[in-house]
Image (cartoon, rainbow, N blue to C red; front, side, top):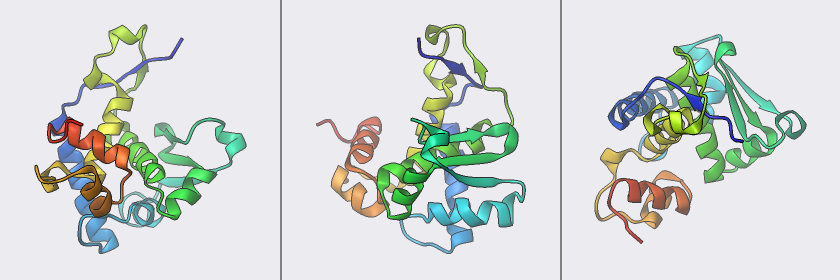
Length: 180
């Protein structure tokens, strides 16, 4: 049986607005321009230095994390990323950067509210699912809807935003631009 969690309902627009705000802060603090953001520098340095000195970005061993790629500890204001995921993200692996963006989504979307265990998965509406919210945040942070056009393809998003083909394809499908 898969555990289901439930949180405060959020619309795509609300998540998009939060991701846009975070993206703007990342670009200002890391002095980056263009479509690709310096996510690792932001989580490693800028959050604790300029936003919240109590934030901790921790690289954990595979033994500690087991099959989890990343975990956000809301009560401790910390993100823990599995060591192999961190090193691949540092090398530019788009899937692993998405994992970090996902955990950042939990931090920015869920830190001031209760995420609680649901009695059953049927009780949780998609917009109340913290995992859906964090995935939506990660997609919006890395590939903002306002920067995507009908002329874009998965390959153009890969090149512009440094994301994987699969993430780009899913993003375009969710925006109703791509139907392959």
